[in-house]
Image (cartoon, rainbow, N blue to C red; front, side, top):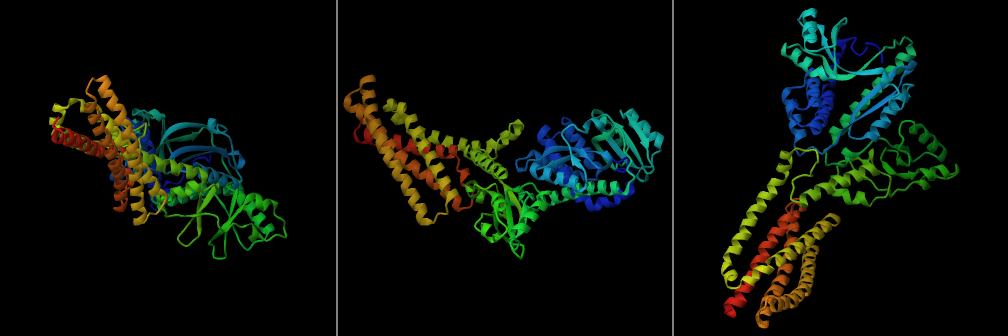
Length: 573
């Protein structure tokens, strides 16, 4: 888009590398995440990852940093989702511009790219408006001062490896390849230990435009500088907050005005800022100290008269969140808000950004996904594109624990083999009691986790919750126990052909066992998440499978214990 100015002064570019290295490494780190998620961690089987690694090495990123980035991306701890987006437009004198972005917030990026074009007197176009003027090619730049090899020898190495073109500039060599041959050419140069200033698959213009007018040069440089500044601010924003903090979800696309303005001044300020920020439905207000004061609905400002006091339009009770608040701790508050966006404040009460309704929905979805995964006995949320080994790692920890708990349950059943040998029919109703106990325990678990998320409970409240769940378990158990006593007794008597007294002794043991198992299961399903919460462990890890297995143990002991005590020891059947 601007001739060979991108590569015209390699030395000048290298001098700026140290200042920008942190930013470059962060951007490449994001690309590694995207490449690994798309095609796996093996560059031999992931062409995109191989390209990114080549780019990283050309930027002098250390090998251990690259490997660490691949391991992090292929693990379970990376919750930020980046995506590529491309914008096309025109700069001064009809220069064609393509902007490729890697972002975690497309809304913010779109607004900032549009702002850069506007300030440089350019314009954003539609998809495809200029891309036909470019070709996707592999491009490798080698600084002459870093390369001791003769130009002819360097050209032969590149062409033999599959390069399409080799050209020599004043202070650098440029090698162009087909995208599919890029990795082979890069590997050949790397094998000869040839240092590369740049190496990437990029868009190469078919024709170049020479800008000579001072105004055009100023505007094109302004666009490029603003895009570069935007990338730097975006990186700093991401690095400032942990992935589980609200600040990592916010956008800087918002309107803010001072509280001391009149209606006309506020309207003019809105119009001025709307050129840079299109999130205008809510206007945020700050006081003389730049601290958050409240918010104004756009329609209220539009219909307001000049003689009205701006302060009358400001909602000082408008909700807000802190930038360092944990998403998991304020997710319920966010779900209850009906506003289009909510301000994110610093510890000093100043507005840093806003979190939009879309971001809130995304945060809620991520948080619920994690909780559902934990309730299912997983260590992280499943991903359809992840490898079999990664899915196994998530599921195995709980499955191993449940395997040993299952062995304990089986061993307990073995203790009561005498009961089964004397009265084999009791085996028929074991699954009924185990299933009901597991269901009741899971219900109590879900209720307890929900209460813990919504409310701060003191000791009295926790004790009340336990008693309430036990009362519910007792009431339901009594009702279902009576039903089991009647219907199982009739079944054993008339279908199985046993004596009436014997049949109702069996059904009586089932009914009483069912009631006791449901009461105890309610107790277990409530106390386990409360205990986890007390010791600062996420209650969701008291998963359904764990509660069910524990309650199986309780139900087996209760059922066979009652049959052994009443029918064998007391009645000598």
